[in-house]
Image (tube, rainbow, N blue to C red; front, side, top):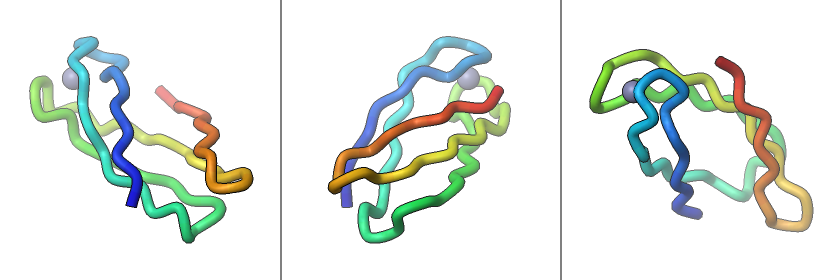
Length: 56
Ligand SMILES: [Zn+2]
């Protein structure tokens, strides 16, 4: 598992998220701990390096 930090697009709070690098293409939906808005993040892995497409 890979820990990744990113900013909430609604309140700009830093949130940590655990990513599973064994799944090449995945979508995470995480609720922000601060403002409770759902954040959808599309992650793809290229040679075990995460590549993010963040949807707002
Ligand atoms: Zn937030």
